[in-house]
Each structure stands twice: as C-alpha cells, then as structure tokens.
Image: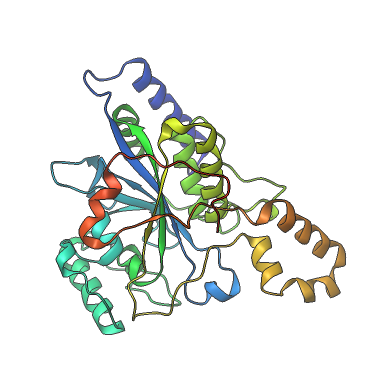
Length: 327
C-alpha cells in the first residue's frame, strides 16, 4: 500500500493463504468501506471527506499492531493519516473510533465542544498513551490524536459492508504487522482514499486505483465507494450492504455530502473564475463532471445504525443494489 514492495508482499501472502488455507476457516467475516462526509473548512473548500476501512474479525493489539478478535469484540477501523508520529496507518476499535467510548450506553445523544474534548481526553489517557508525547491533541487546524476517535461527532458516515474470508483476514493481519508503517502521505497521490483502495485491491480481484480521466488523477472517497458499488453489481457474492451512521448533533454543524473534485468545482461555482482564467481547463473539468464526476451511490435506503446496535455492521447480510438507487 505504502510502496510497491509492500503491495507485492500483500499479494504474496494472500496467495499463500489461498493455496494453503487453515483448516476449518471457510466461514465468512466482514469488512466495510467507511465513507465519511466532509466537515469543517474542507466542507466548503473541497468536500471530498475522509475514508477508512472497518474489519469485523480484526482487532487492535495496539494502534500500530493487529490481531484476530476475541469473543464479543466489535473489530477495528484502520485509516491513513497525515501527521501522527510518522505512522502511515493507525487502528482504533470501532466504538472509540466513532464515539470515544468503549460502552455504547455512554454515547451522548447530543454533545458540545467540552463534552467531546472530555470524552476524547479520557479515552486517550486510558488507551493511547503509547503514542509519542510529541503528538498533540490537535483541533480544527492542527492535526493530532483527536482525529483518531469520536469521528461521529464530526460527520455522518456511510458504510459499505462486503464479505471477506478468514484466510484473507489472517493474511492481511500478517502483512500489515510485517510491512512498513511510515507515512508517505500525499494529498494528490497517497491520501486516505488511496489507502482504502489498497485494502480493496488486497481483498477483491479488481483494480481500485486512480484514473487520469477523472478528478485529475486524484482518488477521492466517493470515487472509491462508487467503484465498490459498481463492482458489487456484477459480483453479488461479496454481499454488499449500505449503512448510515448518523452524526451526533451539537458539536459541529451538519457535515456535507462527499463530492468528487470536479463536482465540487462545478456545483459550488468555482468553475466560473476558472473559466475566465483558463477556459480550456474549465471545459475539461465540466466534461469530467458530466462523464464521471457524479458517482451515484445507493444511499437513500441505507440502514441506520445507532451506538447500541453497531454489532449489525459485523453481521452477514445482503443488499440488492438497484441501478435507480442514488444520491
């Protein structure tokens, strides 16, 4: 993921696990692509949002080391971050990632800034002290450990769950633990969506990668989600199902719908000054938007998840993705 050599290692380990699978491990586990809506300043400037991947049968031994889950554990969320102690990816258990707590009964129905700060600080002091002291808490401008927990206080999240095998999960754990975990973050070429694409490439026989023909070659969360939905329509065996995890109100205003780069430029009017400065570039952006930029997703009928029924995300289910479902 972070390098060509690491991607080759992932593929090699998966091949070994397929050729020599552990006995009795044919049952299906689950994973889910998490497309997180845009919030804060980015919601107005470039509302592409954030992307992470949830695993139902993989848990975090620490934020930088993975293991198989034990009974009753809900799994882990893994994502790429820009500036956290030089790590390329970090793993956080599902409930803390969403709400900064371990017990769903402790999730407030409404929060303010002081409550969010308190919940994050308590979780950090109990579980994240192994991060270097040099990592700040962070905030709206400066990035820090606060972005690892309490995501549902910041934004609405859509989950696209797909089936995985235990052999794949075991190989993924081995590869992630053995591979390099040093950041090579690049907004244009190695961002959170590129990380998610690498995970999907590991699990599914499809090329989830950036296209020069769309978004100027940049991968965005909505593009990866659309590619996964399109793949599922011709491959129903992955049992894709869509879920919505609502934003907890009170801390910030409602997050904004994920958009492609071209869609945000056209729909927010940024294309007008671009047309005056570089009319040919504006024409290319509009063509990109009309041909590829809208990326319809089946979100209208996504199943709502509350903190107390988050275990549904780990269960096996099936959703028919009709072509007329879209956002």
